[in-house]
Length: 211
Figure 1 (tube, rainbow, N blue to C red):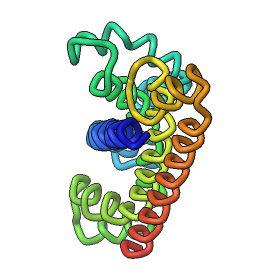
Figure 2: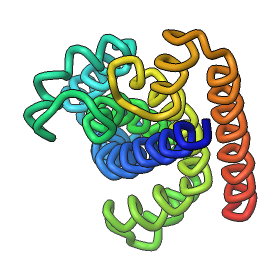
Figure 3: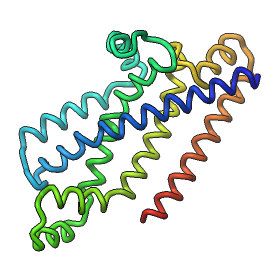
Figure 4: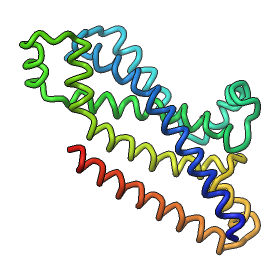
């Protein structure tokens, strides 16, 4: 069992790590645009805000398993194949970007307006306010959002195993379900539970330190 579970565990970490990293980098861009163009933002723009907000909401509404299938041609174009651990990173990332973009937007817009006004009174530019006020004040909340994203991606990565994505989910399906090996199913579930608990504990620790 160890020879099966251990590689699958590393595949899960591989998928979650890269999809989280890419989603956080790319998700920050629409989050900043949404924050700046919001009605209470530094540069309000109703058309830009509502259009981008609609796009984010549309992608967030897709169930992951459906998105996984719809993105097969796109995944094949990006990585050259539609199955495998690396291929699974594409739909995982696409599903994560709108989620983290909305989380980041909420975190940024929760910044105390008094701090923003104080920065304005000192002559700070919009970009200085964005970086030194919005982003710096929001880092603890953004970290909490990233932790929630990682936990969600752990679950999604298990779902990716149903279509040949590898990882713990693949072991649970192939050995636990298809071959009726209940011990594999139990161990797979236990590993995911422990992994999620560890991620949450580390996330809470980092949040407290940053706060």
